[in-house]
Image (cartoon, rainbow over all chains, first blue to last red; front, side):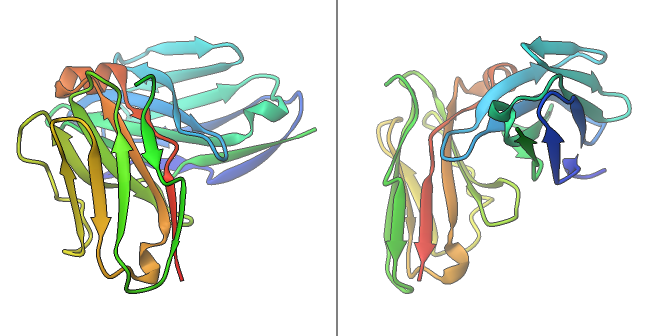
Amino acid sequence: ILNVEQSPQSLHVQEGDSTNFTCSFPSSNFYALHWYRWETAKSPEALFVMTLNGDEKKKGRISATLNTKEGYSYLYIKGSQPEDSATYLCAFFRSNDYKLSFGAGTTVTVRA
Amino acid sequence: GAGVSQSPSNKVTEKGKDVELRCDPISGHTALYWYRQSLGQGLEFLIYFQGNSAPDKSGLPSDRFSAERTGGSVSTLTIQRTQQEDSAVYLCASSLGGQGGTANYGYTFGSGTRLTVV
């Protein structure tokens, strides 16, 4: 993988259901993996910054895992609520770089 | 300031006109970035400023695009002779800077400028 890829591009979830989606990134020159949440008409907001293989982070009902050796991260939303509707961006920071490379995002729509 | 401020929030311009987008980063953040998101696309890197160093302009799509950062603070992105393909949301972000600052603490984004070229 040369770039950051996110899948699926979009998904619809029933309120109360749990869901997860994937970010794939180059496994070489890894430094950090970021997750951002971008709600409509707002700024992207940092959710997690992950640097260690096997790292797990949690914020409320949202959690993320990281596998740097195989180059993927999962983001999980437990018991989805309408306020979780947003585009979730992951971004990769290389050890020989100084800027984040973003995926195209996964847009989550939670139906009441 | 408390956050990253961008202006205007929306801009509609006629094809061929010049536009200026402004970004006021968080005080003390030495790194400033411009990205844009076109419809259906991911965030595309445009330009990066770090302190007094020469900016990395490698992401600017054409010579119609330019940016400056005055006094290590406010930045202006200028698009000359706008084209319809320039229509996008232009996001500014700042960070503590340096590889460790950005990697470990991430970006703080502004709310963006939605540019529409008609």
